[in-house]
Image: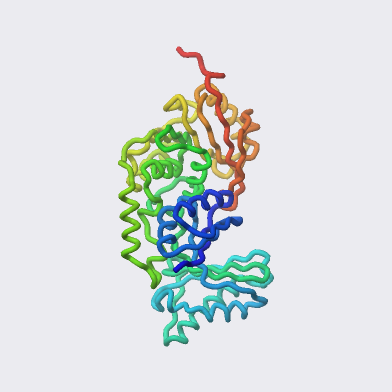
Length: 383
């Protein structure tokens, strides 16, 4: 039996997500802003949750239609057979998102949807499910446009960028699915040199290391679908085992990270260890301008400090040319990628980007600048 799904993702990465869904044999894939709709059976949904590096949530559509008032949405929600999807003793949470929604209060709509679900359970018996805001068993999402509603059951649970092992971070960590998408956009091929010279808590390093050893991003976590009544444990175990059998040996694979902050270096090493892939990457303490490239060519990907992370933009305008000088002298032959909210960064570096990809780090509009360093043009003379 096939179901209708919608996979959300960071804006700018929808095409990459569509490619992932295709690889997991999803059907009727349609790309929209902020996500991709598709069809598939339980196995497809399980595989996408386990393997997608880009998706934020995989939601199963259980209802849709038109509305003019909150009561229309209440009645439509009440008609759905919620007791067939989860049990009354499980906790729920309802989240409503509206785009050009004419209703006065999304909070009131949220309350009415919750009431409709609980009233449907009451009609079946004397009890009603409880609400848990922090850690619900079942998440229900509603999406409202000007006159249409869609209701979803969340099959992921916690967002998929929560891989299940980053328990320590430094300031302003990058979401894992955005980091994975940036690595994919860079065209990096696992097994070739990869460097993040301002690695922070190690998000790029972990995502690259997981790709290099073919470790599924969802291998160390649980999912919302495991709490739904149609959960097929034997099918899930089969998919999990198959994925683990396709993993490559855990060994060093030319992935390097550095940071001038020793605490960040320690955090990155710790997070790699918790992920079970500490041997795949090397992390060292170094200022970028003193860092020698680990190979004659490779891919450099980083999310440098900017504005909100290290203070005043004026400080950065002084450091950008210093970075650029070092890159020209030492990183000839490297393809470099900088994710930043500072849209003037290449201009201040006096380097011309070959690509500018708009991306969003949460609500923050950013650019991924691709700057290819020409080999040999400004190299330092050898001693």
